[in-house]
Length: 182
Image 1 (spheres, rainbow, N blue to C red):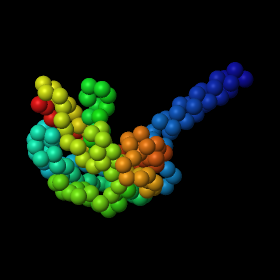
Image 2 (cartoon, one colour; image 1 turned 30 degrees about the vertical axis):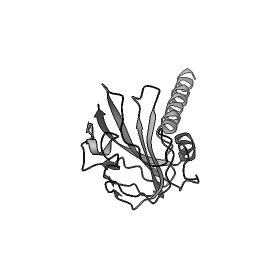
Image 3 (cartoon, rainbow, N blue to C red; image 1 turned 60 degrees about the vertical axis):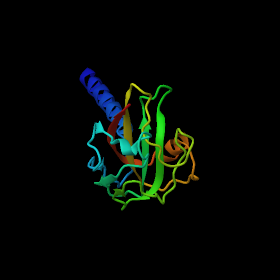
């Protein structure tokens, strides 16, 4: 009797651990393949490399070219967030785009984006390039999200609204990090 109680308790503990593992694994939707192969990259700079000046406030302040690959099956739309977690007053948002069709393979340099864009930390809608305080180097994260839906937000929405709308709909995400210092 004692061994069967111990065995049942072990099974219960294993079941709880597995339940937590599933909950923390990104809550993948049933029938959606999570490959981990989605990529975002730029021909202008390497991951963890320096972003050329022309894409910053010290240059032309145009968006860099970006390429997307390995979009997972079941993706309905993509979203892109560019942020600087090293900003002096907390994470600074540089760019928000959503409802990018799943078959879009990226954006060219300075492209006029035809998809909804949000308000960035400069209080403008669209791209605002890196512009760290003088004497510092910051990291800029370009995060691509594969979503199982389209996002119902108006142009000019903020990052909190976008994150709330994406919650529970992210199939996969990929990240490109660029550096810039002044």
